[in-house]
Length: 165
Image 1 (cartoon, rainbow, N blue to C red):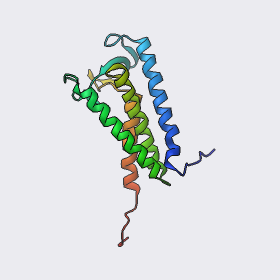
Image 2: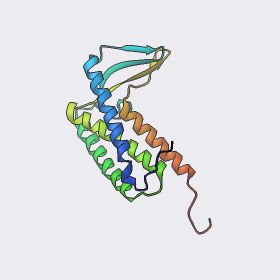
Image 3: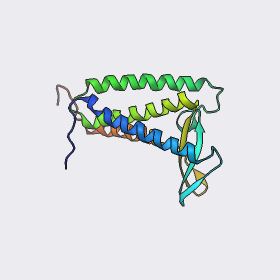
Image 4: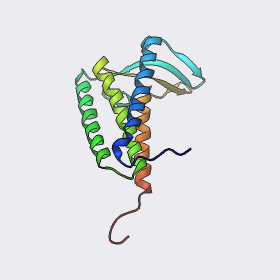
């Protein structure tokens, strides 16, 4: 079975909606099941489910600040979402690029909802090895990371356009 490739970029918004839904459903489940900073559910020797709050950006960057970062990251995410919607509207025939943008959009909006509703982002995926823990993250962060990687991959696959090519 082949999945039809949307010709118009906005047709990829289904992927953003899927990411956003999965992100919010998993965060609500974690909020319901785990006490913040207390409960840990070990799933493997290298992976736990936890419930932590991130007031900063990726890797808790600026989390120690007095609160301005909440509004700054909200503004950045909303501006980025607007730019992504514009790019999706203008992009045709570039499925990898559109999928990447849709993943980033869904992830950005998932974290925006957290910042508005809770004042922080809910993180719960905790990978660790040898006593060292990677900073906890969530479905939205994963989608943003995969989307960014796909944009890089797409840019490497494109053929140069110009008079000498």
